[in-house]
Image (tube, rainbow, N blue to C red; front, side, top):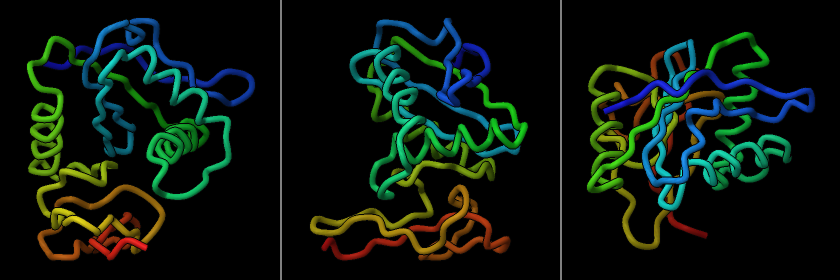
Length: 168
């Protein structure tokens, strides 16, 4: 399903630069894998090119509130590159259901014990109910989806955990 598109890099201003092979004008899934093992799976409903442009633009903005997923992830990717880590970009196109494929891929990563940067669709994670939203409990890295407790806890305490909290 996944096609390697290349490695992420930065320009002189520190903004993310995506490999040319990833800049397609089609909808699809994308997966970022950091050389430390963490991964993020996302979807582009309109076009991968447009979605990656949003990441590039967000990488130059202040971090802002946690609910701004693109900005938060762009900074995570930029920080990984600044630490000398490699970030690979993979894409999958021509899928019947982006939502189902994204959830299935996140579940597969979690089952393999991969630290997942996604907040939603993590099997060990309680599904948010109407009027609720994910609330960060710990900051500093990816959610440790291999944990089976609820709310999730990571023995390393270096990961980000989220719990369902009442929206304010």
